[in-house]
Image (cartoon, rainbow, N blue to C red; front, top):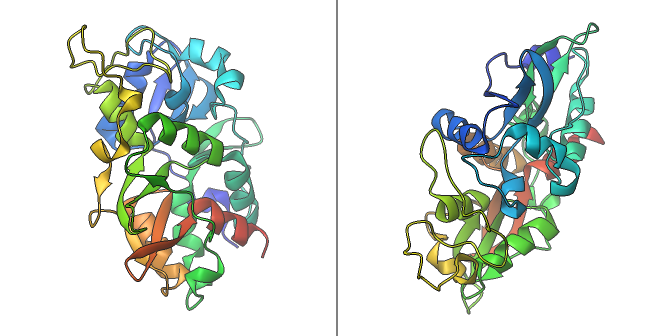
Amino acid sequence: MVTANDILKKTFVKVDVNDTVGDFLGSLRRKKQTFAVVFDGKKYKGLTGRKWLLTSRVDAGKTKMSNIMKQASKKRAAFFVPKLKPDADLKEVCRLLASADSRALPVFDRNDKLLGVVTARGVLRKIKSSYKGIPVKELATKKLVTIGMKDTVGDAIKTMNRSNVDRLPVLAKNGKLAGIVTELDILKRFHKFPPSSMKYPSDADHDGWADPSWDSGEKTRMVGLPVENIMTPYPMVITADFDSTIAAAIDVLVDEDVNSVVLMENDKPAAMLTVKDVLDDYSKE
């Protein structure tokens, strides 16, 4: 039986509560990671990703992680994720990862010592063999959450948060896939953060995030831009065939390190498979 202890990673991004949000994002960017473990000195405090920034008002160069943690319940930040025991089996790991909506979970021993983290990506590698030969259409989400090319960045932010997704297929008027917009696309465009720090306008919110490269007199607001201005255009979008297998789609999720993959049929997006779909399904087997 494979357990959490068998697949845990002992190397991961670490940030301190006294680090700024800019330090946190810079660390993720440099190390090409999507989450970090937060410490207060040597004491574990939580684990988080970057999605909460889509709805946060922060000056990333000044705001400390400790301040963000105090507001975690309001910001819906995934700081306080479940802790795994070393002997937790794959079904339990999948259940907790899916319910926490997190890219990773910490593993603690009986003395409450942090041993490492288990990532969703690592779990997918272990469970892929269970899905060989099974059509992806049996598990995919048929009710696709999409957005139009002329819809705004603000619309995309609201839709992502309402539907709990980190990417949205962008459709042309003919219903064909025009591109995809992700939370990272939005964060990069809004904040243009350098490797170790980034700064937001102090009044940044859904109603007015200005591009920091624009002059102060610029009236155009970022959230009013059409998503076609920031989306990744098709055919650069990461996709899989609607007639492929779940195992093949898992390969795409793992290799590209993404939370979801668009499934195509006749040049149109037919469905989407998410990491959570797979984790949920495996936990119920």
